[in-house]
Length: 146
Ligand SMILES: CC(C)(COP(=O)(O)OP(=O)(O)OC[C@H]1O[C@@H](n2cnc3c(N)ncnc32)[C@H](O)[C@@H]1OP(=O)(O)O)[C@@H](O)C(=O)NCCC(=O)NCCS
Image (cartoon, rainbow, N blue to C red; front, top):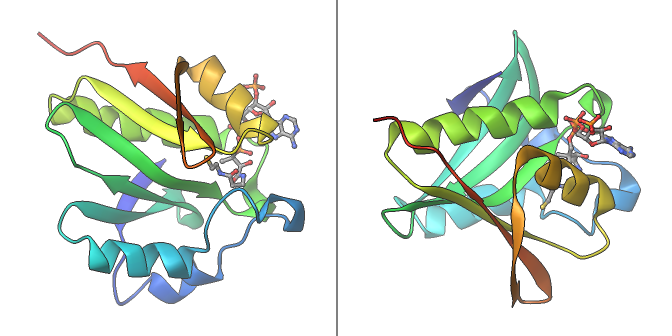
């Protein structure tokens, strides 16, 4: 799994990625996320996810605090879901955070997003007990390299 910048060459394909209809409530469109990234540049970074040569997903990362990498958006295209790519993408994001000496990943999700909750929990995220605009906040502490 490779995370690459969203560029002039791939942004149309990124915008064309989509989740299942019943998942639309769980994540903003990639078009909206790219707009958010522009507004909050340079702290927000939109990234395209590739498995081999295939574009399979999208994430939007936010660097607000030095210790934390916040996952604002995270999606795998509906045609590529349930193949373990979500897990691999989280590992790639954790690698980015570690390479920047960040101690934790954070994110939030809507309470009825059971698949995402299961994935995050299995990966090592725990609920902080806080809510952010009706979303459950989760964090994952990263073992930093010495
Ligand atoms: C959440 C999401 C990114 C997971 O991506 P994915 O590539 O399908 O995830 P994986 O294949 O790595 O599966 C992760 C786990 O979820 C489980 N899972 C995947 N799809 C599932 C489904 N439809 N029903 C039940 N469990 C499912 C898998 O069994 C796996 O658990 P395991 O490792 O214990 O076997 C993807 O479903 C998605 O894009 N959803 C819509 C957008 C969204 O909700 N984003 C998160 C916003 S916070």
